[in-house]
Length: 307
Ligand code: CP
Image 1 (spheres, rainbow, N blue to C red):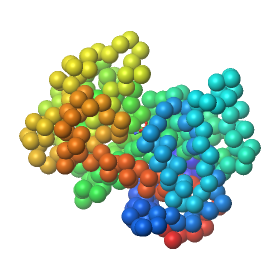
Image 2 (image 1 turned 30 degrees about the vertical axis):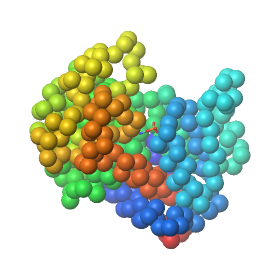
Image 3 (image 1 turned 45 degrees about the horizontal axis):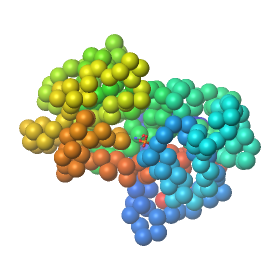
Image 4 (image 1 turned 45 degrees about the vertical axis):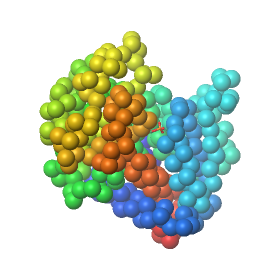
């Protein structure tokens, strides 16, 4: 693959190669000196047109751990505010001789568009409600640390599926690896006919949890609700929020969340900090997965991964 735009054309073998490479880099992160010379001379442009904490910082760290140089662009404070287009912005950044572009954008398809009109290697860091492939890869890496096989694993994704690029990319990754996926949320937050993706849909949290080894709660995306939130946050928590009672009723259940968490909405406060919540492992694995993706896609790489 030349780019990582979404996971639709990534096979199980492709995903396993990324996970195996990420595991090598994960061990680098535990060394006293957390840096390898692998991408010396490569320049990565991190272009973030939407807010981000985890993805932006971990792509920056991942590039730094690989000894690549980075330039970092945020929409606020840039000449986008003066009307410069996405294409012109990208071409000007690439004219500074960058090899790879990591892009987050509110428009679905923005990374695909840039891959057609520029020569850079493109990595999608989240485009609208379309895809967030490195999030799904870090999620399956984190799951793999707790399971023997994806075959027959049951994962429930709870919440605002309609607006969720995380759900779409996780469905692709999990179905490709052989896991079963259940989507659960209010009818207002689940798109019609999504069963076409090979998932089961329920509007009852207990039904989803009863069939799950792992539950992934999604953030209610207040910024993407066009006509106000229905149900309200309070109603949502009462029907779909995961509580300590759920954790006690399902003693092997693992809880994940891509972040940022609305504490007390998707997850009760105590569930965020529960010993079976593996949310911060997801964040650590995000650095390793992004190292693996940058390494595997870097133009002209020659050396071994974690040398
Ligand atoms: N999970 C995730 O994409 O978080 P950020 O929006 O903070 O990058």
